Length: 124
Image 1 (tube, one colour):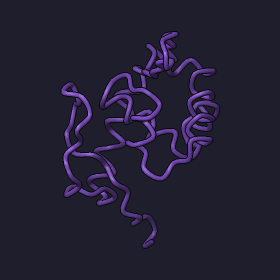
Image 2: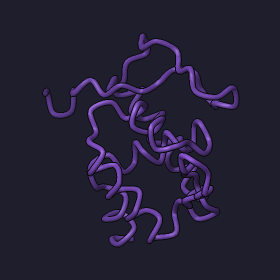
Image 3: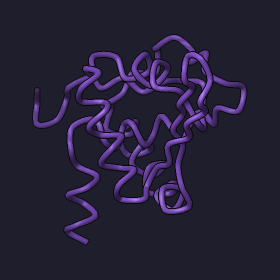
């Protein structure tokens, strides 16, 4: 269990997985827009780490320009209930904004309200 938690607790990792769970496969640029504040370098590192662990897949189409998208593998989908429950707890604890503008990514989104961390853990 410790190895799994170590994989999931890196900066941006659970939020990245949650974004993919909510929206389905996304291209790099759209992921970067969804994860406001993440650098391209950190996003690339997180995607590579999760791909190596078999949690996400990378789909490369050799077009001009190349089209690369990322999505959850079966292993990543197994985390779905855990991610959903963490969202419920975060909302109950008041750690997310319910007033953020609706998410405009994909019509298959499970929830149209994006999560925004409000920094309220331990009185922050």
